[in-house]
Image 1: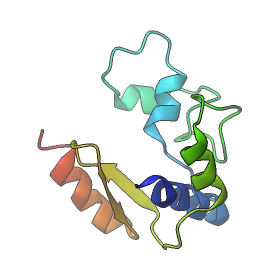
Image 2: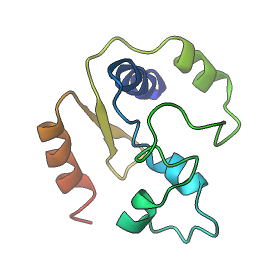
Image 3: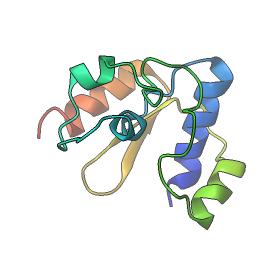
Image 4: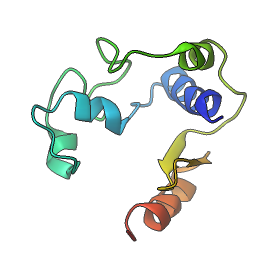
Length: 111
């Protein structure tokens, strides 16, 4: 299960003062989201846009289950700062922006 790894990425970013840049939080702040996250969405100021605002959003974006709460309290031990969806329900995790950008090109931009 990847939840502890995802939790670790967010913990690591918060500790370093790096914006979370979490697409689901951005989507939560968009009225009538059509399923296509755009650069304009990432630039739109909302309380949930973690690309524009550092730190946690003002509230949850979903109702977390027991596994998610446990992962939030006990993140994995990793230096990763990034993750990207592979399109198969899993994610690739990376410690550097260079590695992350390579993964984004591989899994997101070549669809």
